[in-house]
Every structure is written in C-alpha cells, then in structure tokens.
Image (cartoon, chains in turn red, green):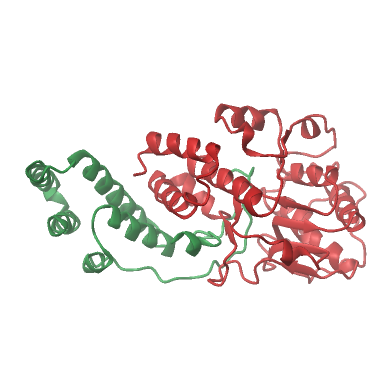
Length: 265
Length: 125
C-alpha cells in the first residue's frame, strides 16, 4: 500500500464512524504488523481481528482467491452488516438507503467476457457442476460495499461461493476471473435465485450525481505507478476531509506525518 | 511572478534544450523576489513529470491532475489553456473490472481511460 492508499483507508474508517457507526478490521498477522508499523491500530473502533483469518484452514488457494478473506470475515459477522473495502469512502449517512433493502451493493458491473468468463471457461474443482437454475444473464455486483440484511441469504451466498472456491486449485492465466466470479457474479446469481432484488448505492459508478462514495477501484494502478499522482490525490483528499475529520487526533497525527514526509503543501 | 513562471513553463515545453538556462533565470528571479526557489522547482518538476506521463498515457484523469499541479505552480486555468496541451476526451471505461484491496497489479485487468476512480469529482478530480 502506498501513502495515498493508506490515507484513503484512514479517511474511510473515520468517515464511516462519523456517519454510519462502528467499524472493525479483519486482517492477518502481516496486515496487522503493517497497521502497527504505521501507528494506525486505533483506527477501527470495533477493533482488529487477526485470529479469524490466521486460524482459518479452508482449502482455498489464496493466490487465485485473493479476496477470500472477505468471504471468511462475512461469515463470522452477524447480520445485518456492511462489508466495506479499505479503498472506499462513504461520505454521508446512508442508513436510510439500507433500511428497506435485503441486499445493497456498490453498483452493478457489465458482463464483460474478458473479466466475467463464460462458465465453460471457469476452472472448477473436481466433480463440481453449476446448478441448472443459475441465471447467467444477471449483472454482477461490485462488492466493495455490501450490505446484507438476513443471515439466510448471507449463508446461501457464502455456501455457493465456498463450494466453488474449495479445492479449486488449477491456476488460471490471469488472477481476476475466478475471484470476481466467486465474489461478485455469484452474489447476483444467488440473489436472483432467491428472487431478492439487489439495491445499488450507485446506478452508474462514474455518475456525476454520485454524492456519497469515493472508490479507488482501478485508479490504484495509476497511483502505484506515479508518485506525483499520489501527492495530488492526497492533497485533494485532505482538502476535502481535513476540516471534517479535524476532531480525530489519529487523523491529524497521520496527516502531520504525511505532510511532513511527502511535502504535500 | 505568475507571468514569469508561465513563460518559463512555456519555454521548457517549446524549447526543452534551453532548460538549464531557463532554470538559471528562474533561480535568479526567485532570489530577487525573495521566493523559495527549491519549493517552486520541486512543484515544477512534478508538473513536467506529470506532463511526460500524460504524453505517454493520454487520459482524462491525468489531464485533470496536470491542471491541478499547474495551480501549485501558480498557473491558473486560463494560462494553462494557453500552454496548448491537448485535452483528453472524457471516456467511460470500456472494461468493467475489479481491483480488490489485496490484488497485486500483476495479471489484472484494470478499468482504464479515466483511471477508474469512482467519485473523483467529490474531491475535485
């Protein structure tokens, strides 16, 4: 994680606490060591859980299913709950948007065949078959933000996802398609199967009408390649949220170090 | 001063061979005006590095970053337009894609063109 990504994570956790409630981080020992090295252990008011992921022994290949930790964390969390990626900032209170929904995700995604492969091209565990009633035409859901109201649907989704990931060890030529199927496309397929509509925070990810969400998404690749871009992005982020988060000592402390070390102003 | 910095940037863009001489002039001017040359020079270097990046990858979001960095160099939008840096057309990503928090850049397909930043307008990008 570069400094701009860390700053995004800091703003994300604090803005969530400010407007939407308590937040907890699930990570592993390596993640926790990184957080401690940056003096950010107090960032999540609900604490940091490393035991869940460290003690998990599911037969999942972490290189292929690099976001499986999210699935495992979701399984441990009581519903209703929100799962929030560390590169996503919710800028406003959103409880009212979730109140009458069973499932809310960030936005739908196009069924691009390079990312969301034809089922015949997906690598599957030995003896695995897709159920006949899977609707392959439903649009996948971006789960950088995911709210699930009931445990019954949560369990169904997670069971299907785990059934696909467990002992599914054949390496694909790229490391995206298997994961996005298990996490994003399956969510929509399972909801369709249960005839549950998915609500989206954004009707279009790049809509200028969006007033509530900032998500680094594919922008991370540009940030990682160019330090100047990191500095300008961080400056914009501080200008937008600096005053609003000035009551949080952790934020002010982090900004102090960030500004001094990287000469933002 | 703004006019002088703008002339410096214009000169470097149009006649890169004169860079050393132009830098020397700028340094002398800053000393005369009691301005912090090293700070300005750092901001200008970032601007030229971004410009180089923009020439390689002609994206809308990099153009926006270039405009913002120009402001850090005391070049407002009106003067920036006079630099005649061709703006990139705003395009929505053709590929909807996913970059999770723990996915490395290796072997991933990213949403390109505008960099895939959702809600960039909320922070002026």
